[in-house]
Image (cartoon, rainbow over all chains, first blue to last red; front, side):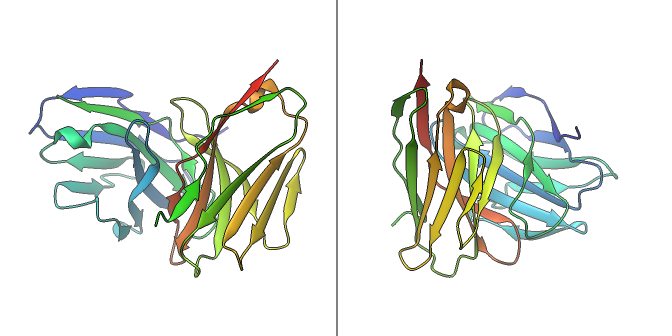
Length: 114
Length: 111
């Protein structure tokens, strides 16, 4: 069964460092997303991406965040200068259409900022 | 007011029991609704969409009350494997899949 894969599964970094989280969406999907979940809290939307550009972004997705699809398979989330409050599980998701609500999530990348 | 609100639980039920979860949402313009399931430290997975007329998938029944902005999930004949957190999800931005998640309701099914 096709799946969304994410790397790394866990990254520990120092405050102020740059972090890149990588995702390989399902191959025939066109819409890509990043969500995050702080431990014990709800899943929160960060950004959606379609046709090589950001479609929507939340208030959380400030200038410290960026996304990129550098080639035909990878979709990355970069956090330029990490803060303690960026510690969370980051989920990549993809879907074939824009409106189904059925997102296929990866297993997540746990980011710990010290 | 929280956009999507759920009782966090936990709901502790014996195997075979019927259990119901409720959820309320604040954005009256929301058009699509879902229940996702999340196992501990895992990713959310779609359980079922929720349609205006109500819908059933095996042991699971979802209902939507637009007037009250209320969504429910009923699980019949609970199994141990149903133990998880159930996330009420609303697509509030009808331009795409900008899903708004509730905090989840934790279910523990005991032998």
